[in-house]
Image (cartoon, rainbow, N blue to C red; front, top):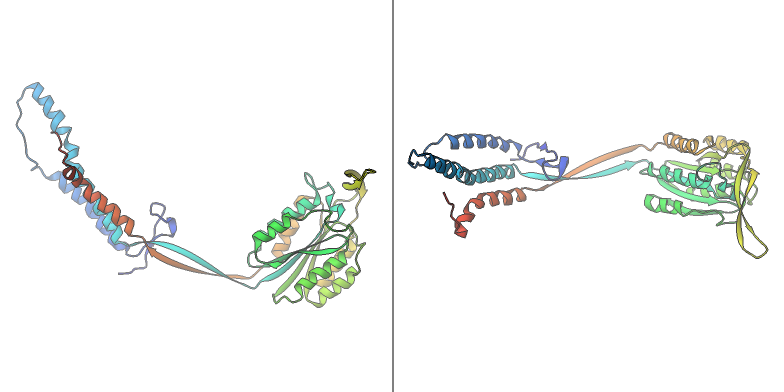
Length: 351
């Protein structure tokens, strides 16, 4: 017989995913207390007559009463074995769950500025780039079902990761992003064009670029407005994020002394964000412009983008059950055979 089944809890191996195929059989467990009660109601175990002397009375109490547990132990071992057989007859099953996610995927290319000014130390206790990388990894973790890629830029643009759903690899590649790995500068237009090239052949229902920069466009052969027009024509939405505080900030700069040795010198610099340009790019493509002045606001911006670009998701859940009555049967067999062990080994119980 196969019923609808019931869920078991932590006492059954497999946890709350376990299941009894025929739970009604557990009703037989109610007979076990009745068998124990009937056992103790019987008085015909035999009797011995002892002298009424005090010494004999003491011997009787220590011998007969002290050995009473040996008299009942085989019965209770068999009772436990019977209980285990009843549970086995109810057919315990382990449930294995598989989930299938059906999504209307979004393709997202994150464009990250790695120019020298991203080393500015106004995002304490770390610099701008380190905080941006941490926030990006959190953003990736919150986007199951989407494909995400990474473009880095300074004076040139480079695809660090193509569109992928391998989030472990993606987080590793984001971790590996470093300053000074490409010529310095801020080529915003070139970076946007690079990201658009990655998204132009995408068949996703929604295509998004998230541009994170802290400077003004001063490099590259492609004008930012022209790149924004390309994004508009490809139906790519661009969210722009300006990173940095107003006023002067301390920026570590690499320098080479007269002996060719590389040094890091900290200088106070005025780093400006071209808010007007970033606002224009966002407006033209249907996105939004954000300003991040500290780690908390940058994290909040990515959370807001995450909410704005939600992914419709439908989850199908499949459960497959595997029979798990065998361990219960083996345990029951052990309890049923235990009372026979002393006889097999030739042990005798002293009265």
